[in-house]
Image 1 (tube, helix red, strand yellow):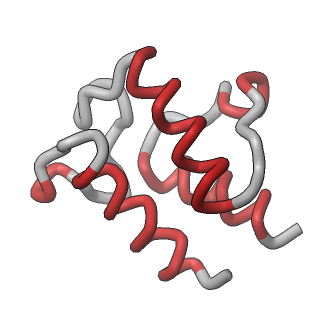
Image 2: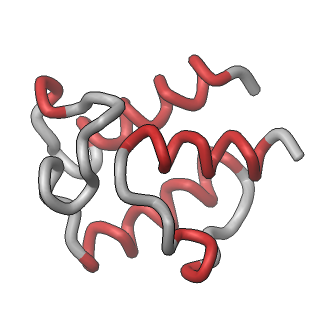
Length: 81
């Protein structure tokens, strides 16, 4: 899966499922501070990622994920390993 495909899927579920304003979705946007993603949203994200990308998120692997770019990097590493 290409980086663009990953970013497009992530963008789509952030807008459609989490109802995040499209203007806020930028690579350097912080998931919590800028996008307003809270612990309940993270539960939804775990389910969405599993459905769209075919792997389970492990909480310990997400400790360094702060920005949207970090999140897409994480998905790219998991999908393309």
